[in-house]
Length: 360
Image (tube, rainbow, N blue to C red; front, side, top):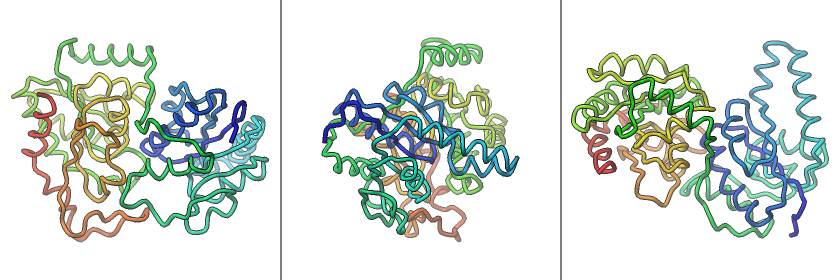
C-alpha cells in the first residue's frame, strides 16, 4: 500500500511503558514511508516523552481518563476540552489510525471524523468500529511490543528494528546534569538510580508491584559502601514517602529527586545513570529505551509480557517463581492472599550481585 504523503494517527491512552512499546511501530512506519505525517493521541502525563520523538509530527494529549478529571472539575471545561480535541484531530485529515486503546470509543470517534482505515485489536468485542483488527483476549506468552508490531501486517510493512526509542533534548540533558552536579555528582562518578515506586499508571494498586523500600535501601547502602556509588532516588510525587524511608535509612545520603524531575527531565537523569534498579514500571522501560543497564524486580506481572524489551543481556529481571505468579492476567489483578510473597522473597543479595555483575 502506498502511503506517501498520507497521515497516520497512533492512539494509545496508557502509561509510559505502553507508549514506548509503540515506538518500534512508529519507526517501521517512518522507515517504510518517510514522508508520512505521524500524529499521536495520548494522555496528558506522557506528552513530554512523545514531544521528544522527532518521528512524531504532532501530539494530541487528552485521554478519556483526563477528560473524566476535567468533567469533575467543571462540566463546561470538560465539554470544551473534548470539542477542542476533536476539532484539532479532525483538522489534520488523517487517513489511517492505529488504535492501541482496546476501547471502542476511540475508534468510533476516528470513524466519525472521517479516518477511513482504522487498525487495532478486537478486545471483548470493542473493535467493532475498526476496519482491520486482530482478535485479542489479553497479552500472554509474548511481549506487548510483539502484539503491537503484528498490526503492521495490514499495511504489508516489514519490521527491521524492534528496539524502543526515547529522545532526550540537549536542553533536558543539560538541566539533568546541572541537577546532579548540585547534588554532588562529578563527571567520573558511578551513578546508580533507584526507582522504588511503580509509576502512576497503576494508581492505588501500585503497591502490589513494590519491592520493599527497606530492601532497596539495603542494596543502595551496599552499592554506596562497596562500589563507592552515588545513589539517586527517582519517582513521582506520590512516591515521596517511599523515598523518605530509603533516604532515612542510608548512612551514605542519596540525592533524592523524587517528585522533582517530571517527564521533561526524568529521561535525561536516567540517561546519566550507569545503572537503574527498579520495580516493574515506566522508569525501567525508559532506561531500556535509553540504553541504560537495569536490574528490575517483578512480582504480579509477567516479565515475558511486560519486561525489559531488549536483545541486550544488560537487563536482569529478578523474580520468585511461586505457583500463583504471575497473578496479573488479561488486564486483571487477582487478590493476593500471600502478602506479596513473590516480591518479598527476592533477596537483597540477589539484587546486589546482579547489579555488581552488570557494572563490572
